[in-house]
Length: 242
Ligand code: BV8
Image (cartoon, rainbow, N blue to C red):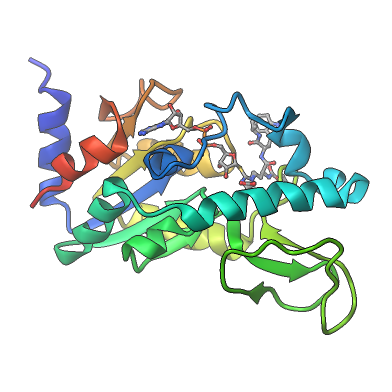
């Protein structure tokens, strides 16, 4: 008889000493940050896939800059929610690597110490020339245009846009963290965006137990060891309680 998914997930998580978690916009929803799917993938009537791209930045840099100013403004008011905090607290009894698709920085704010930002950060901008990324205090409503102080080239968000490759070093670090994990958590992601989602599918292929926590079923649900449907802010503290 199939074990109750919550009990199965709890037994996997309570035993694991090395945990890896892939998180998406859903884990920050209860911090008040809109997910991409909930907003119907729209921001001010623009499809995110049309704004978060290098083409959009070339075509209308001011619009893209306003999009990220708005995200920084919302992000600056956001606080980690019980889901972020439960992952951070888990570090008291396990090695926890968080591979996040989010750019809001909330895992770090919650106290997680091994966070891989797959898609960059709202809180960093970088030169479109050759200079290294600039970290800066939040919130940042940069006026447009903003030139790099070192070389005068335009600044851009230090974020991976659609159509841009992820940093190979980030992908290697993510694969290593997944391969050494005893349980792979997938939290608040529609598991559609690549290559981030492929890390979860690779964990399944490698026979690593995968526990999914999401409000709705996703393409991963039929392959996960357990899928818990509900709010991450409610389920994770129960799932990861010592
Ligand atoms: C690349 C930064 C190539 C921007 C982001 C067709 C098929 C497959 C792939 C593609 C394709 N066409 C194009 C592609 C590639 C594309 C892609 O995957 N597109 C998708 C739309 C199909 N990928 C790329 O472009 C990547 N780059 O492929 O480059 C390349 C290679 C070599 C050389 C040159 C080029 C780059 C992808 C990164 C894009 N940047 N973010 C920004 O944030 O502004 S992605 C962005 O969208 C987010 O970071 C996030 O990753 C993604 C949205 O996904 P989720 O996080 O899952 O959020 P979503 O809203 O979808 O889901 C939330 C879930 O949470 C829902 O299921 C919901 O039910 C649940 N939920 C809600 N509330 C709660 C909850 N769960 C629990 N509790 C709650 N309270």
